[in-house]
Length: 161
Image (cartoon, rainbow, N blue to C red; front, side):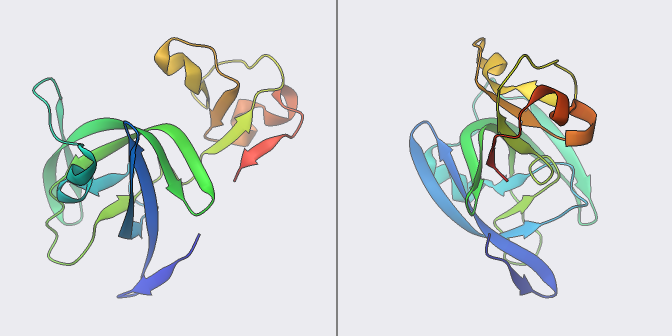
C-alpha cells in the first residue's frame, strides 16, 4: 500500500470492480474514525455505479456535517495487494471543500481474508462470504482474529493481509 500525506492526512489509491469493470481511485483518505467506506458518486459513475430506484438511502454524519448516501456491493475493493471480495461501499456527493475521492474506513481496515481449512463457527466477527450469495465459499472474512477463533478454525493459511 502506498501512502502519502496531504495536509497532514494519510491518503492512498484504491481499486474497485463492479460488474466486471474496474477503476483506480486516487486521493482516498484513510480514516480510522470512519465506521464505513464512502466513495464519490461522480468517480464510480464511470463504472456504472449509479443510484437505482430500489436503493435505500442512508444519512451519514461526520465532522464535516451529514449527507445522504446509497449502498452498493462491489466485486472487490483493493488497496495495494490486499483485496476484499464482495465488499459493500457507500456512495455519496462528498462535497467537503477539498479534493477527496473517498474515505477508507474501519469496515475495510481491520478485516482479513482467510482460506477456509475447517468448519468455521459463524458469528458476528467471522463471515463466510459465500453465504452472502446463498453459496458455500472457501473464503472467510474475519474482522477480529482473536474474537473469531482464528487459531482454532484455521491452520494459518492467510491469503491477503
